[in-house]
Image (tube, rainbow, N blue to C red):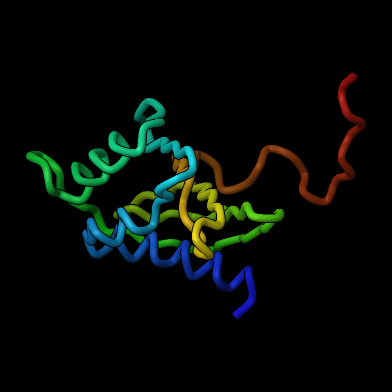
Length: 139
């Protein structure tokens, strides 16, 4: 299996744990040793692993008021730079589409999440012409 395929499989396991309300799978998806961070849509940043896992318990329905929405990943774009990989994808949550960035590190020979950030999408297209040449950098 290629490194990119292994990264994409780790991303798929994260979304499977999310969709299946699999708390053990969600815990396994996250790094145990590396520093972690998570930004759920509309939430402040969570930097402590214990707080991140508590947030997933709430989202996945383990705490009062929590109920897991239907969720899936679409159009993943994966990149690996050394022992860090990231996947940018569309995250479909119920009727909503979010953009997500999932950053992974190799830990114990497995890709593990160190950062998840999802945010709403308010436009179908960037407000620039995609065929236009980039302008010079600002100095």
